[in-house]
Amino acid sequence: MKKHIAVLPGDGIGKEVTRGAIEVLRAIGERFGHHFSFSYGEIGGGAVDELGTPLPDETIELCKNSDAVLLGAVGGPKWDRLPVHLRPEKGLLKIRKELDLYANLRPTNYYSSLADASPLKKEIIEEVDLLMVRELTGGLYFGKPSERVERDGSDAVVDTLFYQKEEMVRVIKLAFELARNRSGKVTSVDKANVLESSRMWREVAEEVAKEFPDVALEHMLVDNAAMQMVRNPKQFDVVVTENMFGDILSDEASVLTGSLGMLPSASISEKGPYLYEPIHGSAPDIAGQNIANPLATILSVAMMLRLSFGLEKEAEAVETAVNEVLNSGFRTRDIGSPGKKMVTTTEMVEEVKATILDNETIN
Ligand code: NAD
Ligand code: IPM
Ligand code: MN
Image (tube, rainbow, N blue to C red; front, side, top):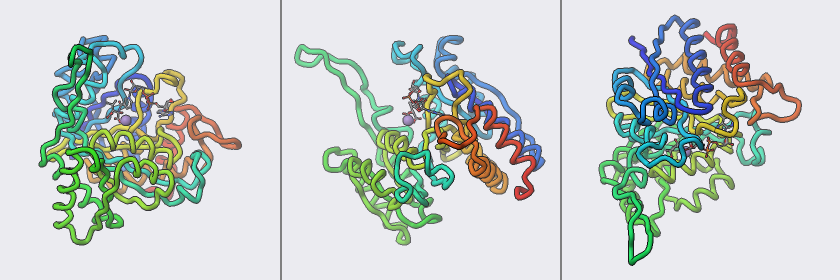
């Protein structure tokens, strides 16, 4: 099978973590006899500096001609004051739209070895296994108009929350399909007490639920959901929600695992290629210091092996290696605690690679 991967490192720690994840993929290739090939593309602030646009056409072509896309992160203070069409984040939004990546899967798992890294009590986070399904190509992020206006003689602004019903149907259906193979429960998060879009979302969820009699549906208002996420996260299995609510709730959910640097994601479309990226950003505060946690990106590569290439055993090998490295006490700074072995980004990558290559329990 062809396994050609487009790599878009982007800005800040995006470069450091994708470099590490590719090394892990190479180790998987070596151990299991696969050949992965890589082509690099520009996206984000670096692309603006070099080519005058956050998403050059060549990058779009490169992604469309690949079997999977691996992305680091985009953005940073250097580009924060550029006109909106030149912002690095526009590049990310555009590639999501170009590839029609309508659903973003963001799993949050409990690692017993990381219980100390979370500010939450162990009893609260123990055994958490939650899958956030975030709508990714609609809502406030893409609605038009989105602009400064003058209203009644004063400066004003408008952003638009627009959804077509079909856009809701496909992502909610996907959440039900995924729930079927998990514990059989979907929590649909909305703000139906205020927003018309949420009222339609709720109706769609109920229509879709009729096709899945084996899956239980509950609705939850987003403000309550944010509170329940830290009060009693074990009540959740699959959570499905619109674009912006999903963005916010998934950063919150990362605290259950212990750090934003641990959460992977897969963005999927009807036809592929899918795109894999950590949920975190370019972390300008730690970029260039070789201290970022590469595990979110490494775990994103595990999702790639499973979802784009059907390589379940290889995906598990990556996940097992990550678990073992954590169990052995290796920690980047974000998940560090006293008595653990503090390592750099590159050392963490080396540990994961060595575990994949040497560990006899992985085969
Ligand atoms: P961020 O996710 O970059 O960082 C938030 C905090 O988490 C920072 O303290 C950072 O150091 C820490 N952190 C994030 N990833 C980490 C990792 N792997 N290891 C250790 N610590 C980590 O969010 P932000 O600071 O709000 O945004 C910075 C820039 O990133 C902005 O320009 C934003 O637009 C962009 N951003 C991009 C993406 C993306 O490309 N997918 C996602 C989020 C934010
Ligand atoms: C993410 C990021 C992006 C988003 C930004 C950078 C556009 O926060 O991937 O979670 O909001 O989707
Ligand atoms: Mn985000």
